[in-house]
Image (tube, rainbow, N blue to C red; front, side, top):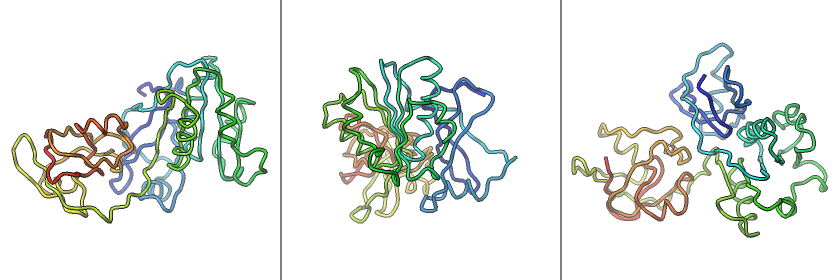
Length: 286
Ligand code: FES
């Protein structure tokens, strides 16, 4: 299979036409198989339930080549922070860091021992791993300020997990003066957006000059699709960047987790799978 680096994910095409991204969690040195892990989440938008209920051993699934938006950078020490099933890309990183003899530690926060994925595999990392169980005693809970304070100069931090966990880690680190370029994150699903105040707006295509209305209850991708204009999408929730489109005029209302704050402020591209417009018209470079 094509080689991959730690932190990579693949797009998986599921029964029913859904496409979802999953991090590869096997050792990047192994190229004879890819491994993903999918938590069954009844509250999900359908991907995890389709995987659990409709995919059977022996089935063939279409997948993309691996892509990496969450690469490991060289550092004197690496701090990996996993919340729940966010362990998957970090497990792959831990394998890579161990293989290269690099200095690292992994903190893995989960609900209970019974709900801890990869328990045995993680135990093999010995004292470089600390488990923090929600239902365990107070002494073993993740004391993030203390963990951050104990890191040597130049440490890079990687976090993956639910949105609330990532936001908590980032805000705690930033408040303690960690440089933004040493904080690396990967969301695996966006929090639901409040769409009650959404308004209709126009998009104009630079190539044809044609304008289309995006109603309050549709995304730009959906509105254009109805007129036969396809924008390639994958996650459809502003996480993967597949749909990224250049904006030539107008003001974007960014709703994604993909672009950085600086990129959003530049206002020259947006993710039409979820982002909208603050101005009445957006002119798109398509
Ligand atoms: Fe993933 Fe738009 S399709 S960000």
